[in-house]
Length: 142
Image 1 (cartoon, rainbow, N blue to C red):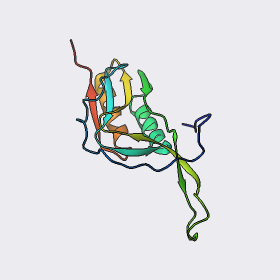
Image 2: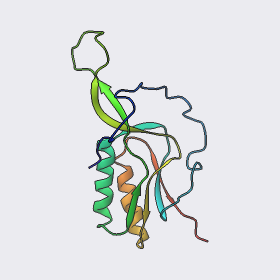
Image 3: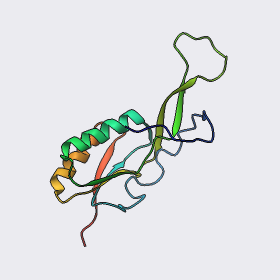
């Protein structure tokens, strides 16, 4: 299971502005560096550690523990939330969960596997567990 970072500079961070949704071409940002198959995001979003873990487990289940996998993201942004029915003010809420921000075209998983069809199926099933649209990519032969 993914854990929280060992150290962070600040305990709580600002939410940030989600601008630049259409900047850059999705899928053109970075080539595959490790494996033959990968999963890329097609839109801007925030993925929690639980969602990443669900995708990792699904990917592991469908590939029957064959091949090598690298996860290229880590949940390093603390997301805060105030309790329900609390009056305004009194500061920021406590950290509820950890997440990671993804931009269009950034890759999340890379797989090195001999059985290509099994790797493709595993990445496709893992992509369905994530809150952003994804695209399965392959390294060009040659």
